[in-house]
Image (cartoon, rainbow, N blue to C red; front, side):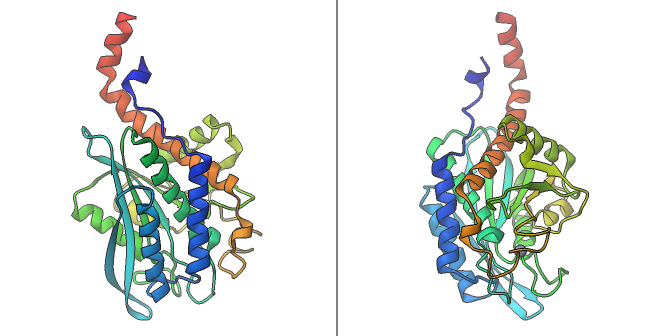
Length: 303
Ligand SMILES: [Zn+2]
């Protein structure tokens, strides 16, 4: 009977992984590098807007100015609101940055490109099924990368802005999931310590349910990423990141001209996408079950 009460699960398919791949490839081929505050950074934001719109989803650009170590710069976030539950105001927010590290001519195939693609792939999955049992806000951030050292006016401009916009618009957020570097052929997703434990459990459960238990592990390290602005705003947040990219964490191809498409695989994008839809399934279903418990109990009695 539950299948009658709950909408069909969102499934990330090979077609969605293709969309993710094409998104990353387009950014790499047409917008390398795309450092925040540069013309190519701006073009990248418009490309993302176009590619999300091509899935049928509505997307909007949020243009804002902020101080940086190089003076005042202009930034461009992209948002897509996928509201499918008219009885519920809460959103699950998924965040990926699309900018590249300034000054290192990095194509950012994995660091920025892969997860920008994952979110576009998710939009594609949602628009194909049009039946998700909840509300999703997709956030593509500009200016995740710092110019010198992370600090008050250096780095995370886009996520700080997104949190401000969420507050300003009165959007209720159930959970925020930040994804970063999830297209590596050799995929090992980690959950840093500064993530919500409840969401970490859901991620591990979703991996297990997908038969991909070894995909995800928790680590004792703290990772600075776009989820921090959400954590600081008191929003349950998690970071899913594969920081081991062609070498020890924080070395290899990371932030180098070697971060190119040949290091990625569609299979990894598919696995990452399925992990996200598995998490959404739990996050959406949790509310559906609690809100429809009365009805389910009634049905159980009838059975
Ligand atoms: Zn980076």
